[in-house]
Length: 211
Image (tube, rainbow, N blue to C red; front, top):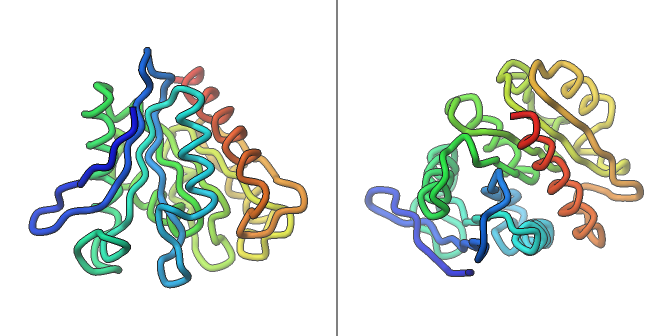
């Protein structure tokens, strides 16, 4: 069951889209975070689209949304995206009739940065998958201490996510963790969307088993 929705954020709303399976859901469900809007990123991005379709087809509850100031979402970019992500987790959990610990954040690039901050602030969220996090520019070291399932995926030609830094981060994670490399893919993962969705689904299955 697929539907557009609005996520209330006080004096404005965030644009989103939700897909719930007809039968018993596979868990955890997933909230998707899109890449940086200053470079054209939104919830219709090719990687986010592939994840939304792929995870929904596999029977997972899934929600994608536009951060504040993007698309038809209200608010102003750069003024509270972590709150946006937390609100999206709550909306998915309520819509699917599950707990926050049964929701995973799946963030791509900018969405991965916001997702990592959200994990650091909200201990109730169940798991985290970072797709092509820009580790060349940002430190996601706090993830290593969160104790929950953490997974990372990137292309072997992604200069924004150096493999050595990705491997070092994952190796330091104290909870269940995993790392996957997409051969021949750069930061945009064009043409690899189906493979990314399939691997993320495997990660989420592992997170469920480890919990």
